[in-house]
Length: 152
Image 1 (cartoon, helix red, strand yellow):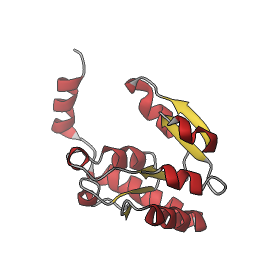
Image 2 (cartoon, helix red, strand yellow):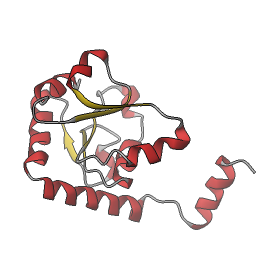
Image 3 (cartoon, one colour):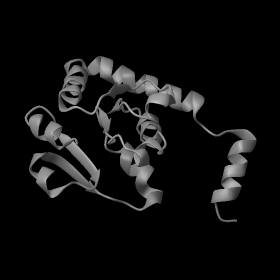
Image 4 (cartoon, rainbow, N blue to C red):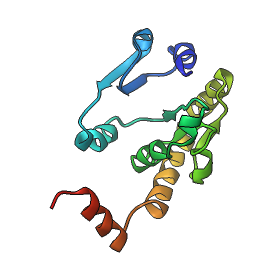
C-alpha cells in the first residue's frame, strides 16, 4: 500500500525502515535497520530519531482488530505520526494525522508535515505528552502487569 508513496517521495524523504523492507523498495531506502529481539526494540526504535513516523494499515478485518500499539510506541519516542484512518487508530483519541489509504492522501499528509518541521516536532511532543499522561500503567495496575509478565 505504501510502496507508491515511498517511490514518489524518494527525492524528498530519507526513508528509514526497521524490521523488514520489501526488496522492491530497497533502492529508495536511506537507512535499513534489521529486526532486533523484543527486549532491545524500544531502545532501537528511540535511537532512530525520526522526524515523522508512518503507520499504514490496510483496511481489513484483521487490522481493524489490532491495537494502536504503533501510535503508543512512536508517541513514547516523541515521533509525530501519520496513520491510516481505520480502527483502532481512529478511536485512540491521540493527536495523530489520520489519512485515508489513498496514495494522494498519504503524499499530501507527508508533504504537509515536511513543509513545517517545527510544527511537526511540536506534534510529536504533543503525542508524547498524551501517551505519558493517558496511556501509562501506574501503581497497583503496574504491579499486576509486572507480576503477570516478568519472571519471579
